[in-house]
Length: 188
Image (tube, rainbow, N blue to C red; front, side, top):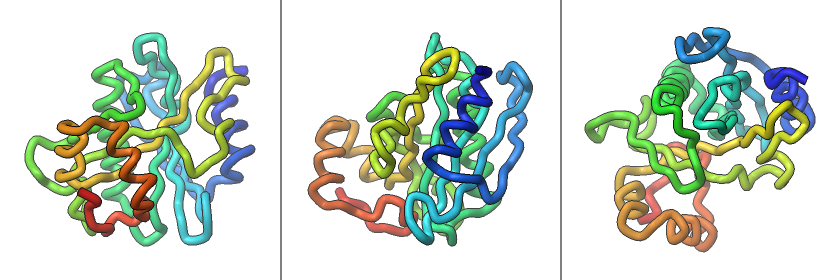
């Protein structure tokens, strides 16, 4: 089964049908483009899951990956989609997958990721809001990892650099912040 077909099948099983989609041009992509699908009320009512589809066709050092970003519906905007597409371009250019614990600072200054938030970085995590089986697609020609991009504050990015990603994830479990609220206060 071609990779993109396997991705759509996997998403249908865990996310349902997308409410809308966005076509993203990417010169590093073998087909020149991939999709970002929007799933409403996933993983719960009022939430939105944005999921790349076809990004796994971009080889990342023998690794295949799709990414999801979760937020509340009120945060979905053209700005958010452009930010996500920009991050995918950074990943494709680097040819390195986003492994758990990686922090991305897409801009050189403390500029926020997008309008309506003061967060300026992204944290790569395991998609814990979904069943364990969601993380790895095994029915494709090759296994495809699904990573979760969590918007974080600059202070959190700095804290991760000093204390490590395992300590940050322990803080997330301990404090249980609403990580899909892009206006949440920093936890450190």
